[in-house]
Image (cartoon, rainbow over all chains, first blue to last red; front, side, top):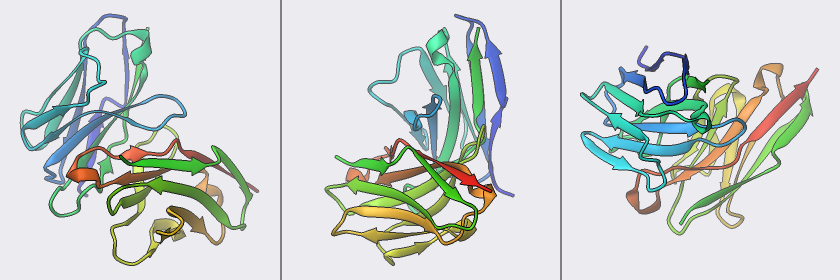
Length: 114
Length: 114
Protein backbone atom coordinates (compact mmCIF):
# COMPACT_ATOMS: atom_id res chain seq x y z
CA UNK A 1 0.00 0.00 0.00
CA UNK A 2 1.15 3.51 -0.76
CA UNK A 3 1.87 5.33 2.43
CA UNK A 4 3.74 7.88 4.49
CA UNK A 5 6.33 6.40 6.83
CA UNK A 6 8.00 8.10 9.75
CA UNK A 7 11.04 6.86 11.61
CA UNK A 8 11.56 6.44 14.41
CA UNK A 9 8.11 6.37 16.02
CA UNK A 10 9.60 7.36 19.36
CA UNK A 11 12.78 9.37 19.83
CA UNK A 12 14.47 10.39 23.04
CA UNK A 13 17.18 13.01 22.91
CA UNK A 14 19.07 15.07 25.42
CA UNK A 15 18.72 18.78 25.89
CA UNK A 16 20.87 20.48 23.24
CA UNK A 17 21.77 17.29 21.36
CA UNK A 18 20.91 17.48 17.64
CA UNK A 19 18.27 15.09 16.41
CA UNK A 20 16.93 14.16 12.98
CA UNK A 21 13.50 12.79 12.22
CA UNK A 22 12.77 11.18 8.89
CA UNK A 23 9.77 10.85 6.63
CA UNK A 24 9.39 8.86 3.45
CA UNK A 25 6.49 8.43 1.07
CA UNK A 26 5.55 6.01 -1.67
CA UNK A 27 2.72 8.20 -2.95
CA UNK A 28 4.92 10.27 -5.27
CA UNK A 29 3.31 13.43 -3.94
CA UNK A 30 4.93 16.73 -4.80
CA UNK A 31 4.30 18.47 -1.48
CA UNK A 32 5.66 17.41 1.90
CA UNK A 33 4.83 19.09 5.21
CA UNK A 34 6.21 19.00 8.73
CA UNK A 35 3.93 19.74 11.64
CA UNK A 36 4.52 19.98 15.36
CA UNK A 37 1.69 18.84 17.60
CA UNK A 38 1.73 19.31 21.34
CA UNK A 39 -0.60 17.51 23.69
CA UNK A 40 -4.30 18.24 23.12
CA UNK A 41 -3.53 20.84 20.46
CA UNK A 42 -4.00 21.14 16.74
CA UNK A 43 -1.02 20.48 14.47
CA UNK A 44 1.16 23.53 13.86
CA UNK A 45 2.79 23.87 10.46
CA UNK A 46 6.56 24.28 10.60
CA UNK A 47 7.43 24.25 6.89
CA UNK A 48 6.73 22.58 3.59
CA UNK A 49 8.40 21.61 0.34
CA UNK A 50 6.66 21.94 -3.01
CA UNK A 51 8.94 19.83 -5.15
CA UNK A 52 12.32 21.36 -4.26
CA UNK A 53 10.95 24.73 -3.20
CA UNK A 54 11.18 25.20 0.53
CA UNK A 55 8.87 27.43 2.54
CA UNK A 56 9.41 28.20 6.19
CA UNK A 57 6.52 29.46 8.31
CA UNK A 58 7.28 32.86 9.77
CA UNK A 59 7.04 31.67 13.37
CA UNK A 60 9.12 28.51 12.96
CA UNK A 61 12.21 28.81 15.18
CA UNK A 62 15.62 28.83 13.50
CA UNK A 63 16.41 25.76 15.56
CA UNK A 64 14.28 23.74 13.11
CA UNK A 65 15.63 22.90 9.68
CA UNK A 66 14.51 20.60 6.90
CA UNK A 67 15.98 18.77 3.95
CA UNK A 68 14.35 17.07 1.01
CA UNK A 69 17.03 15.23 -0.95
CA UNK A 70 14.53 13.66 -3.34
CA UNK A 71 10.78 13.31 -3.92
CA UNK A 72 10.41 10.42 -1.50
CA UNK A 73 12.30 11.63 1.56
CA UNK A 74 12.12 14.59 3.86
CA UNK A 75 14.01 15.20 7.09
CA UNK A 76 13.43 17.42 10.11
CA UNK A 77 16.56 18.51 11.93
CA UNK A 78 16.38 20.07 15.37
CA UNK A 79 19.78 21.59 16.00
CA UNK A 80 19.60 22.16 19.73
CA UNK A 81 16.45 20.68 21.21
CA UNK A 82 14.97 22.37 24.22
CA UNK A 83 12.45 20.98 26.67
CA UNK A 84 9.76 22.95 24.86
CA UNK A 85 10.41 21.01 21.66
CA UNK A 86 9.03 17.81 23.14
CA UNK A 87 6.03 17.03 20.96
CA UNK A 88 4.62 14.76 18.28
CA UNK A 89 6.08 15.58 14.86
CA UNK A 90 3.87 14.78 11.92
CA UNK A 91 4.85 14.50 8.30
CA UNK A 92 2.18 14.88 5.63
CA UNK A 93 2.09 14.77 1.86
CA UNK A 94 -0.14 16.25 -0.78
CA UNK A 95 -0.51 15.91 -4.52
CA UNK A 96 -0.97 19.51 -5.51
CA UNK A 97 -2.61 19.87 -8.89
CA UNK A 98 -4.62 16.66 -8.56
CA UNK A 99 -6.13 16.65 -5.05
CA UNK A 100 -5.24 20.07 -3.71
CA UNK A 101 -5.05 20.50 0.06
CA UNK A 102 -5.87 16.84 0.74
CA UNK A 103 -3.11 15.71 3.06
CA UNK A 104 -1.93 12.23 3.92
CA UNK A 105 -0.28 11.96 7.31
CA UNK A 106 2.33 9.62 8.63
CA UNK A 107 1.97 8.02 12.08
CA UNK A 108 4.18 10.64 13.68
CA UNK A 109 7.35 10.63 15.75
CA UNK A 110 6.99 11.39 19.43
CA UNK A 111 10.03 13.31 20.60
CA UNK A 112 11.05 13.36 24.25
CA UNK A 113 13.75 15.77 25.43
CA UNK A 114 15.50 14.91 28.68
CA UNK B 1 -7.87 35.01 6.14
CA UNK B 2 -9.41 31.71 7.06
CA UNK B 3 -10.37 30.36 10.47
CA UNK B 4 -12.09 27.37 12.01
CA UNK B 5 -14.02 27.05 15.24
CA UNK B 6 -14.95 23.70 16.71
CA UNK B 7 -17.66 23.97 19.31
CA UNK B 8 -17.02 21.71 22.26
CA UNK B 9 -13.57 20.42 23.13
CA UNK B 10 -15.16 17.24 24.50
CA UNK B 11 -18.28 15.39 23.37
CA UNK B 12 -19.61 12.28 25.06
CA UNK B 13 -22.22 9.97 23.53
CA UNK B 14 -23.56 6.53 24.28
CA UNK B 15 -22.82 3.66 21.96
CA UNK B 16 -25.50 3.59 19.27
CA UNK B 17 -26.39 7.27 19.70
CA UNK B 18 -26.06 10.02 17.13
CA UNK B 19 -22.67 11.69 16.86
CA UNK B 20 -22.67 15.42 16.07
CA UNK B 21 -19.41 17.38 16.04
CA UNK B 22 -19.73 21.05 15.21
CA UNK B 23 -17.48 23.10 12.98
CA UNK B 24 -17.86 26.66 11.78
CA UNK B 25 -15.46 28.28 9.36
CA UNK B 26 -14.60 31.67 8.03
CA UNK B 27 -13.21 32.15 4.55
CA UNK B 28 -13.12 34.98 2.04
CA UNK B 29 -12.79 32.49 -0.82
CA UNK B 30 -14.61 29.25 -1.60
CA UNK B 31 -13.18 26.92 0.98
CA UNK B 32 -11.87 23.40 0.91
CA UNK B 33 -13.11 21.80 4.12
CA UNK B 34 -11.90 18.63 5.78
CA UNK B 35 -12.53 16.44 8.77
CA UNK B 36 -9.63 14.40 10.11
CA UNK B 37 -9.60 11.81 12.89
CA UNK B 38 -6.65 11.11 15.16
CA UNK B 39 -6.33 8.07 17.38
CA UNK B 40 -3.88 8.15 20.31
CA UNK B 41 -0.24 8.24 19.23
CA UNK B 42 -1.21 8.19 15.57
CA UNK B 43 -1.21 10.66 12.71
CA UNK B 44 -4.29 12.28 11.27
CA UNK B 45 -6.51 10.30 8.92
CA UNK B 46 -8.79 11.97 6.41
CA UNK B 47 -12.45 11.23 7.11
CA UNK B 48 -13.99 13.33 4.37
CA UNK B 49 -13.57 16.51 2.35
CA UNK B 50 -15.71 19.18 0.72
CA UNK B 51 -14.44 20.73 -2.49
CA UNK B 52 -17.48 22.58 -3.88
CA UNK B 53 -19.17 19.57 -5.41
CA UNK B 54 -22.06 18.03 -3.45
CA UNK B 55 -22.91 19.81 -0.21
CA UNK B 56 -23.53 16.52 1.60
CA UNK B 57 -20.27 14.67 1.79
CA UNK B 58 -19.96 11.03 2.76
CA UNK B 59 -16.77 9.77 4.29
CA UNK B 60 -15.26 6.67 5.75
CA UNK B 61 -16.54 4.74 8.78
CA UNK B 62 -20.12 5.93 8.27
CA UNK B 63 -19.40 9.62 8.82
CA UNK B 64 -20.86 12.42 6.77
CA UNK B 65 -20.84 16.20 6.81
CA UNK B 66 -23.01 18.87 5.29
CA UNK B 67 -21.65 22.13 3.92
CA UNK B 68 -24.01 25.00 4.72
CA UNK B 69 -22.75 28.23 3.23
CA UNK B 70 -25.47 30.37 4.80
CA UNK B 71 -24.45 29.13 8.25
CA UNK B 72 -20.73 28.82 7.43
CA UNK B 73 -20.87 25.39 8.99
CA UNK B 74 -19.52 21.94 8.19
CA UNK B 75 -20.79 19.71 11.00
CA UNK B 76 -19.78 16.06 11.18
CA UNK B 77 -22.38 13.40 11.93
CA UNK B 78 -22.70 9.68 12.30
CA UNK B 79 -26.09 8.05 12.96
CA UNK B 80 -24.85 5.43 15.42
CA UNK B 81 -21.69 5.72 17.48
CA UNK B 82 -19.38 2.79 17.93
CA UNK B 83 -16.78 2.34 20.64
CA UNK B 84 -14.08 2.47 17.98
CA UNK B 85 -15.12 6.05 17.10
CA UNK B 86 -13.56 7.35 20.31
CA UNK B 87 -10.79 9.66 19.10
CA UNK B 88 -9.85 13.30 18.47
CA UNK B 89 -11.53 14.96 15.51
CA UNK B 90 -10.16 17.99 13.69
CA UNK B 91 -12.03 20.22 11.28
CA UNK B 92 -9.80 22.07 8.81
CA UNK B 93 -10.07 24.69 6.08
CA UNK B 94 -7.77 25.39 3.14
CA UNK B 95 -7.79 27.14 -0.20
CA UNK B 96 -6.96 30.70 0.71
CA UNK B 97 -5.00 32.35 -2.13
CA UNK B 98 -3.79 28.98 -3.36
CA UNK B 99 -1.32 28.74 -0.50
CA UNK B 100 -0.14 25.75 1.47
CA UNK B 101 -1.42 26.48 4.94
CA UNK B 102 -4.29 24.43 6.33
CA UNK B 103 -6.06 25.96 9.29
CA UNK B 104 -7.03 23.32 11.83
CA UNK B 105 -9.62 23.70 14.52
CA UNK B 106 -8.65 23.05 18.11
CA UNK B 107 -10.09 19.57 17.97
CA UNK B 108 -12.98 17.75 19.63
CA UNK B 109 -12.36 14.66 21.68
CA UNK B 110 -15.18 12.15 21.27
CA UNK B 111 -15.92 9.76 24.12
CA UNK B 112 -18.22 6.80 23.53
CA UNK B 113 -19.87 5.20 26.54
CA UNK B 114 -20.90 1.56 26.59
